[in-house]
Image (cartoon, rainbow, N blue to C red; front, side):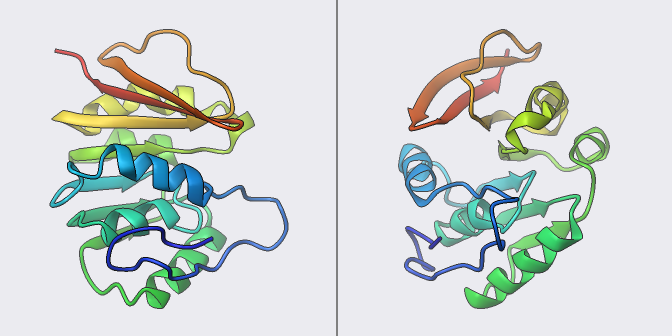
Length: 177
């Protein structure tokens, strides 16, 4: 697992031992950031289920100026801190240790991008989508990573794009007007 673009490009990140945690693959991260490459600079980015921090570090690497890494797992945050040290990131980010639902319900901060990548079988993606509306800037976007294609509607959000990479589905949403 490595950073695929920006100032930290090529740096290999620490991963979890075993297959308990599934980080977003280099291919999916690269594809996602290619889609938003001209929009991420100077933006705020929430990596809601950050795990190793690869998505948020990639956002920092590509010019996001305010990245929040959130995870309920202290083990994840320990690995995240190692990865931030590896890339020598010193500012432009904040680390929080909350349940994702609690974070979204209580966040006073608004984000330009919210990346939701929960454990696939947990159902937390569908729980967090409606909650993300209140933490999203007016022109912001939410992206859900899941093993299934999103079908349905979420009040306050409109699907703008869907992509499939092997077994990974990305669904892009914007705030409904």
